[in-house]
Length: 55
Image 1 (cartoon, rainbow, N blue to C red):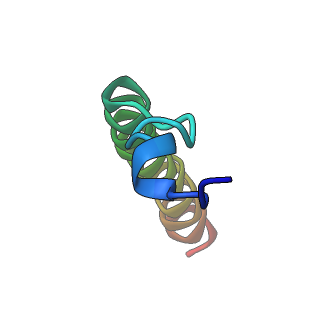
Image 2: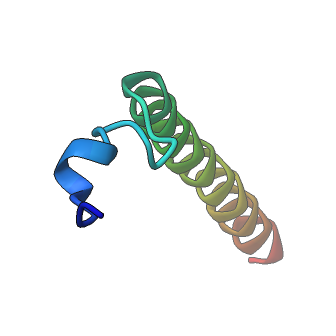
């Protein structure tokens, strides 16, 4: 009976991660950070305008 050799039996994509998954993950991260920045800027702008109206 032969021993189990993971280098022979498993390839680099056997974990379910492909180049497409990596690219989509990076694009998703960029979009998420962009949306977070937009929402943050809108909230900041709202409070700045609200503060100007109170004076």
